[in-house]
Amino acid sequence: MNLLGLYNILLDSYGYQNWWPVDIDYHKTHNTDPKDEVIIGAILTQNTNWKNVEKALENLKNYKLLSLKAIKHVDIELLKELIRPSGFSKEKLIY
Image (cartoon, rainbow, N blue to C red; front, side, top):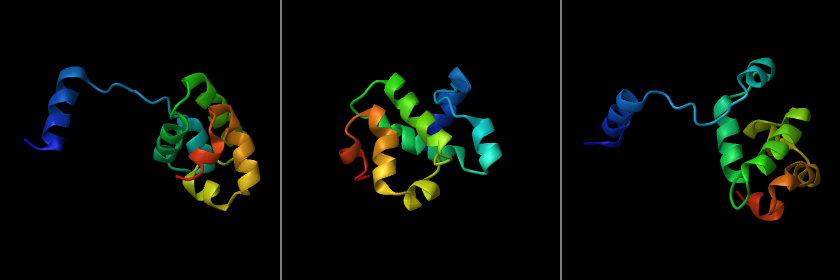
C-alpha cells in the first residue's frame, strides 16, 4: 500500500478532520494560498504552545503578511517582531 492509499482509507474511516484552523476569509480577501498559513504556522508552532502561535499569526494578518510571498519581501526586523510571541524568532527565521 502506498501513502495515498493509506490516506484514503483513513479519510473514509474518520472523515475530514479540519485539523488546522485556516482563516479562509483572510485568504479570499487577500488572494493568498491557505496552504501558506499551514506552512507558516507549522514552523511557528515548534517549541511553543498554540496560543502563542495564534498571536504571531494574528500579527502577520494585521500586516497582510500571512503568505510565503509576502514574508519573502518583508523587512527582517519587522518579521522578528511580528513572530516574537511564538518564541525563538531568530531560529524560526532560518527556515
